[in-house]
Image 1 (spheres, rainbow, N blue to C red):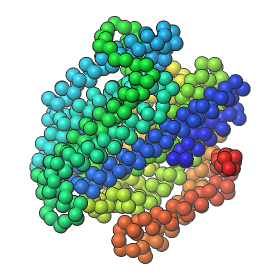
Image 2 (cartoon, rainbow, N blue to C red; image 1 turned 180 degrees about the horizontal axis):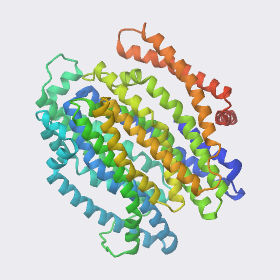
Image 3 (cartoon, rainbow, N blue to C red; image 1 turned 60 degrees about the vertical axis):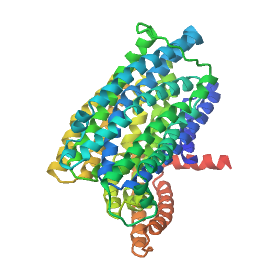
Image 4 (cartoon, rainbow, N blue to C red; image 1 turned 135 degrees about the horizontal axis):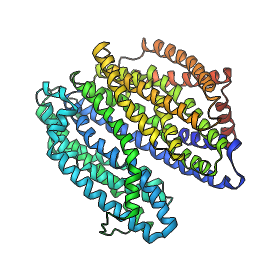
Amino acid sequence: MRHGLGAVELLFKGVEETARPPAEGGSRAQLARRAGVVSAAVFASRILGLVREQVFAVFFGAGRELDAFITAFRIPNLLRDLFAEGALSAAFVTTFSQRLESDGEASAWRLANLVINVLAVIVATLTLLGIWFAPALVRGIAPGFVAIPGKVELTVELTRIMFPFLLLVALAAVAMGILNTRNVFGIPAAASAFFNVGSIVGGLGAAFWLAPDYMTSIVRRATVAHDPARAEQAMVGMAIGTLIGGFLQLAAQMPSLRAVGFRYRPLFAVRDQGLRQVLRLMAPATIGAAAVQVNVFVNNNFASYLGDGPVSWLSVAFRFMQLPIGLFGVAIGTVTLPLVSRQSIRGETAAFAATIAQALGLVALLCVPAAAGLALLGIPMIGLIYEHGRFTSVDTIAAAQALTGYAVGLAGYAGIKVLAPAFYALGDTRTPMLVSVLSITTNYLLNWLFTRVLGFGHMGLALATSTVAIGNFGILYVALGRRVDGFGPRLPWLVVRITAATGLMAAAAWGVDAALATWVPPRPTLGYALRLALAMPAAVAVFWVGCLVFRVELPERLRRLRLRRR
């Protein structure tokens, strides 16, 4: 957790050298503290999400039931990204802030109620349509499931149960926007952690209630034949837990909403200018998010033809990616956006370029070695967390292969979290949108090439996703360089030096892990733990030395920052 906070603080410390007006020191320090809160909450949420995935792996393994759940959850998840957490939050915060400044609190609260009510009507309608058309949706996203008896039917049932989650999370997103605008960050940032807690506890409770024999047999490690019917009932319980988690994500923010002055009113006025502005601002971001989700659907479509397991393996692997993306990419991008927005308004081009370059330098410093570590130590990491119950060593190896493919694009994923907000700060939402739309065709062609022509299987799908992420980052980087004079001329050389230090680290980590793998205890959990306990410190130490050898400056600043803390 301190690592994520240190990254955020380091960003501002570095930017201060070139871009700080004297009057802004206090506000920047305040932003750093707030970003630290966000980073800590993201870290807690990702860890709880990992626990949630571990629960699924233990009780269901990587097979028919888990494939069905992941596919079913992706359908409302698509609409969540389109209408809730991403596009809506950004558009609402901007408009709510303007209304608050120009017309006062009463007008701002009226806008909040209008957005909530209109959103509730739209999303409730989509939920009903989604429940009705669930069979067609499932066959569209996972046509390969038809070849496996009962898999389509189970996915349809789970989809219908979880579709109301969309309404809960959409309302939670508005609540988060209101609280952030009122400078309340801790509770809304932790809301997704409440979702994970609710889905774990509520899901397990419902699963034990619906299928006690199946769940008890897993807990007792009883060697009984797998009963698909009982496993399906238990998975229905986990789907119910998802709704419980969604409710907690919304309910956890309600006391804070009341504390900042919000009171619900049943208002409805579709001609309100503020409401129309929210919808207008949402449009480009929604299209961009739709492109990303289309790629997810395309990946699921290809994976559905690869039998039981690939959908689950890919999901397990990407869960490991979400921690560094959220902890580094999202946290750095979140705290960068307000700063570059002010610099853009003031016309401070040099400061703008310096801020983005510092942010991307941090992304490279944190994510390039993290990607190498995920790729090289994927088997012991996945095995230590997931290889219990019905999740076997075969599943561990397959998921680690997918993680290797995903790790290739980690720095690209995280870098986009910094570059896209930079365009928003310049008032340009069109460029990120067009890049996302372009990725649809690229992603499909790469999936077809890697799986159908080259036969890379599920690892090819992960590799295609990473290739698209790197390509998107490259296009955005070049486009921003053309828009902003002096942006990033030294950044490529910094990345080269970080990559060289990472190469030394990778060689050390591989050597230590390979040596340990031959004599670790036969018990897999203990063996995986020992491999990580010895290989990871060796990798960190060698990376640090490599940074000194190749004169990577950012670790020196981090070292000085730690000395100041002492």
